[in-house]
Image (cartoon, rainbow, N blue to C red; front, side):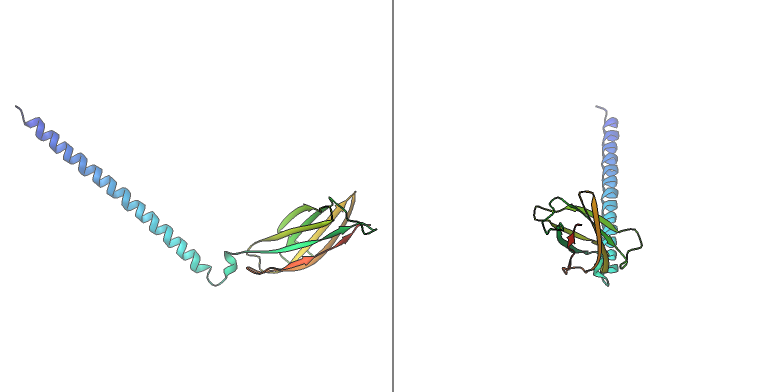
Length: 158
């Protein structure tokens, strides 16, 4: 019986096992490093936002009202377009966001506006259109995180 081949095979098996263990160890270490970097970045982000909680908190407000005809009848289905501006009224810059809704059967409309990093007094521009006629009004709403504010803007169509 020739044991020379057996020794080579045993040495080869041991070398293969050692290489496999080394590769597995490298993979595990790289995974741990990635987890540590991710945890570090998340911690730094939270610490950076600690002074101003609005950095990570959504802020919003409600714009609502009624749309009626000259005879005080509700205008069902009238379209209301609400623009939210960063600056105060009158708005001179492009809107931060635009939301469109339609009045219900009672002529009532309601829109929630807001976004991240938006605390403070903001200009609201509401444009209402029905039967080819448009009417627009502006108002100011205060938007703060974890507080609810609203502005009512009613319309009477000519």
